[in-house]
Every structure is written in structure tokens, then in C-alpha cells.
Amino acid sequence: MTEAVIIGVGLHPFGRFPGKPALDMGADAVRLALADAGVGWPRIQGGYIGSYEVANPDAIVGRLGLTGIPLRGVFNGCATAGTAVALAARAIETGEHDLTIAIGLDKHPRGAFAADPSVAGIPSWYGQTGMFLTTHFFGMKINRYMHDHGISHETLARVASKNFHNAARNDKAWRRTPLSVEEILASPVLNHPLRQFMYCGPNEGAAAVVLCRADQAHKYTSTPVRVRATALRSRKLGAFEVQSPSFPVGEPVESPTVDASRAAYELAGIGPEDVDVAQLQDTDAGSEIIHMAENGLCKDGEQERLIAEGVTGIGGRLPVNTDGGLLGNGEPIGASGLRQIHEIVLQLRRTAGARQIAGTPRVGYTHLYGAPGVSAVTILST
Amino acid sequence: MTTTREPVAQGLFTWPPTGSAPLRLIASECADCGLLSFPAATDCVRCASTASKERLLADRGTLWTYTTQGFRPPSPPYDGPEAFEPYAVGYVELPGELLVEARLTGSGPERLRIGQEMRLTCVPYTVRDDGTEVVTFAFAPVEEETS
Image 1 (cartoon, rainbow over the protein chains, first blue to last red):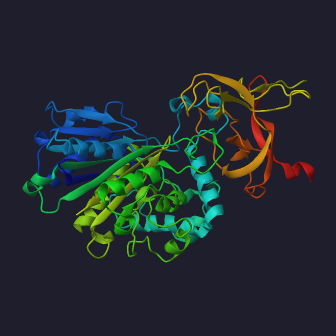
Image 2 (image 1 turned 120 degrees about the vertical axis):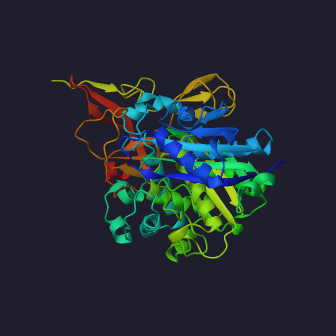
Image 3 (image 1 turned 30 degrees about the horizontal axis):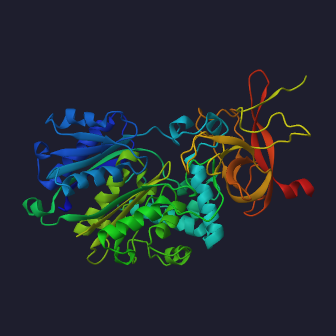
């Protein structure tokens, strides 16, 4: 099978852009990615585009060029962008196309996501009585995890502080004010034990990634980034997942993150010990901690020591969310996973500027998790 | 004046609770594989059967995890009072049955701890314009009732 490689990445800043439509942010990201790849839009043979708020994100061709290519809309909750890049890579691997693009864009209103529970197959009473909040799940999951594995409130704050400090080095990040552990621990509790500065917020932004056949990469770039694996898994019966009014009693069932991660490592022939830099879904500080273990990057409970020692900082052995993650960048759902890939590509090319990790990183890892229990992993390498 | 109380939804819990039919959550049991579902569901997520029968769940269990709600949820879908009062939610493990997500009585985390015994109750979570109290199910720490 032909291998897919990334030859161009483009990122519209994440934040608030009053008056600027999501499609315009997406078009900007695409132009940046095309320029980075050194190809014009008419060369692109097919693409996958994800958005939560834009009903027809494929309308972006009205800003880029009506070339008649298949451009498929995708949506998979917070795993949307992982899905878009997986399908763009698959189209190359199967020989359907030689040059593809994955695009993500979104423009969310302020505040927590609001929707009718029926969109998730849940009765109305669940929303009416104040249960239909994803933030409850994150609060309850890390509360149980802290109880079982001895994680402290200080560790939650250290993760958030790290990500805000990383974002301060990223001119495309949204939250660029560094916050100390003390400042984070002094912010109001939203969902015990999670505080205001331990949560990411929905916002606006766009990203795009251009891929081509590995055997043609030399025509475009001297630093292609290989797509070693993409994997997506949904929840299994018995797993503790977001927006579950109940789940069966019994032996613990692992999260779809564990399933997607294992599948990706196996496909790539790469193990967690080989990962040089990772981007993990940090919807909240607790999620980053749990996801370190669920992605095989440490054992349950080891996070307490690793984070205290700065292992996941930019200067550490296993840097996590070097661009500030979701905490620093916010979450335009359709674009979030492509932002992760953008950062990994910069790190592997060693062009990440003030937040460049040391040495010669060879393997990068990205992970998404979202409702109603879906996880996407990509493994990239030089 | 008598206050009228209504359940937030039919078929969610027994209503009105009486001495001979106390408050219980209404689940379904798959007729083919026995899987319990709450709220009651016609489709089984284990074997895809569409045949099920009603089953009342235990009214006692242990607190598996919890959190608090410190801001008014987006409305709709939330239809609690405009003057927001924080509340707590958690999963209660009903032994051999299900882990059920529910409102917990009270609002602070101080009186809650993982593993503590909990008992089913109901709380009026909002009041309609005509004065009707709308009731939903909740769990309360057992030790508070006995202390």
C-alpha cells in the first residue's frame, strides 16, 4: 500500500474573530497549507472537511476554486479533525488520489456547548434537570481517577499552568497569559475538582493539512512527515463515557482512547516508548493526566511524579501539548485535531521557534476524545 | 394552598410514591440477554433485541464518583430556576444492576465521598409559573438521614 505523507500545514489563529465567517478562516488556513506545500488548489484531487457549526463546510470551494473535486464533509464530535486527516490519508494509501487535503473550521458561540439531548439519543429530562453537560463527565472522571491513583489538586493546576505557559510562546494561541499554579488553584470551582482555569473553552479557528503519496513527496518538500497510523474507535458497552445516564456494573471496560491508541501503535510498528512529542486532548487538566496513561505514555498514577518533575514540559523527556493544547488554544471542534497535527509537523521539522523541543524528534503523537465516546489517534514520524 | 408536584418525565421513576409502591427507578431488562437499561430502552445495546420488560432498580447503592455544578447550565435544555442554585451530580452503583447518573441532594463536595452509602429520593428541581413543583430523582447520603 502507498504511504501518505504530510507536505503542508496551515493554521488560522484560534480565538475570537468578530465578523469573520468560519469559511473565511478555513480558506485562510487552506491557503497557508497550500503555500507551505508549494501546490496550487487546482492540483488537489480530493479532500475531507469537518465542522460542527457550518452545515455545509464544503461550500469553502466557493472561496478556493470550483474545480469539481470530491470534497466530503465529516463530523465525529471532538474527533472530527482526526477523522478528516485519516480519510485524506486513506484516499492516498488506497490509490484513489495522489494529493489530498484535510480541512477543519469552526466558530462556536461563547460558553459551554448547548444542545437538545435528543441529538445524542438521550431523553429531554436529562437536559431539563441539568445533567446534559460534558463538563460533568470530566469532573467525575478525574475525581474518581484522583481517588484511585493518588493524583493531587496541585497536579491538575500544574498541567494547566504548563499549557498556558506553552501557549504564551505561540502567537496563534488564544490564551497567551501565563498563569501560576497558585493563580489556577485560586480560580472558582466549576465542577469539583475542576476550576475555571482548568477548562478549555469553545472558540473559533481553522486548520488544514496537505498530503501526498510518499514516492512523490520529493517534488514538494525535503521534510515530509510520514503518516504512520491513524485509528478511530467508538465506546464499548461498560465503558464510562461522556453523556451516559447509566452504564453496566462489572469489570472496568477501557475507554475508546485505549483501543484507538493500541490499534495505532500496532499499525505504526511504533511503541509509546518511541514517542518524542505528544498532543493529547486536554478538554480539562484532568483529561490530559488521564490521557497520558490511556495512550500508553505512562502507568496510572505515575503522572503525579512525572508532572512534578516537569517531564511533560517543553524541556522534558515527553513534552505534551507544546502549543498550549486545548487549554491554551480553545476548541473549535472541526479544527482542533488538525491544530495538533500542525504543531507536531512543526516540531518534527524543528521549526517550532520559541517552543521547539530539544534534540531531533522523530515520532509525534496526536489524540482526540469527544462525545459520545469516540477517540482518534494519529502517529506521525520523520 | 396545596402544592402540586409532577415528575419531570413519565416512566422514569414510580410516581407518586406510596407505602406499598415506594420510589424506585424504572429500568428495562432485555428479554433475550438480560441486560438492564436506564432509562428504560426498547433496543438492547448488547444483543440488539427489541424485546424487553420493565424492571424496578434497587433504591440503595454506593457513590462511585461525583462532581458539583457551579454555573447555570445553558438554557434550554436546562429549565431550572433563573436564580441558580449549585447542585451536585454523581454515579451511584446499584449492586449487580447499573451505575446510574443522578442529581445528589445538597451542593457542596465536603459531605460526599466515594464509596459512601446512598439512598434514592426525589427533589423538586424547578417550579412552573402555575406553582407546580417539578420533581426529579436524586440520591442522598444515608448517613445524613441516620445521624
